[in-house]
Length: 425
Image (tube, rainbow, N blue to C red; front, side, top):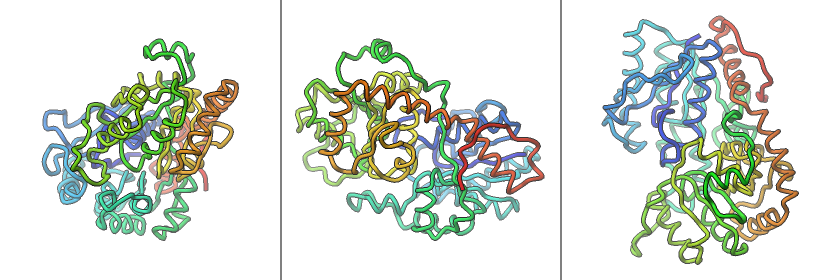
């Protein structure tokens, strides 16, 4: 079997923690590698953002990343990328002709890839599998102002993809319900396959050892990992930290650690410049000595932060799944998260962490304070979290993806790996 994976707007090899990188990059990278290990030939097509990088890069286990020129070979906005999708599709087609190969399945990630995937599906006569990762209508339902709203272009294209894709992958039953409710998706064309975690990389280790390696001082330690965007709810977390004891510290991993505070004349709450606004909020709350912006960190160092933290906090207004929660739990770190979206299924309330009302700093502070005061409870949650995360190993998750391909193209599948899977109907 040969699969064309589309990740138009972001490369699975890109450094994590930036404005355009996150859980989707990890998902594409890890599933491609695991599919290769299963004997599936995988080519991941992405838009070239730098003319100096190799056109073809090995991802591992025979999987490849193909960088295709489509518009300027530089970072550009997503609306502009949409204008160059025709060029992207032609690049995929040229690669196929040059190598004399055919693909059995197209798998699109994010709405931009879905648009390209629909065109390739029609040209090749093969099934399209689509995973959105986030949904525009859901993001708009929690947007704080007009600057955060997703454009009508995205909403209409998502609706078109939902109506036409052969299968849609939802990360959990909550996302499946959202697809049905907000987009009118046919439930029988949605496969629920969760995201995964690298349990060989993210695994429990001594908290004191992790703190020593990071050279962080003793005392209560809270962790946030992710993009610095309004939808992530960091203002709520900062307000909660202000209510905690002075000994507690918050480490923020992700985004631009050096972004300056905005001008007093700056207006709006869009993602652009949000890190600077968060810095200003920290100063206004008098938390300069307790909140640390660390910027993006390599994954091998990130695991030390999870192991060192007393809790990882996800105060998001919307998350389709929450891979950060899974990474933290794999390291034995309890998670305190908003009761929204996929976090409601990723985090087992009272077993691997706690769910709290979104946007409520008082409730968040109360839960964090109770957890920081109770080491036995933290240990209990951490043990269960690690066991829970073990069911989400990438080989198992990818087997479910491969099984989905086999349902669509049974003659193209030679074999499947075996293992416990998290596919749900």
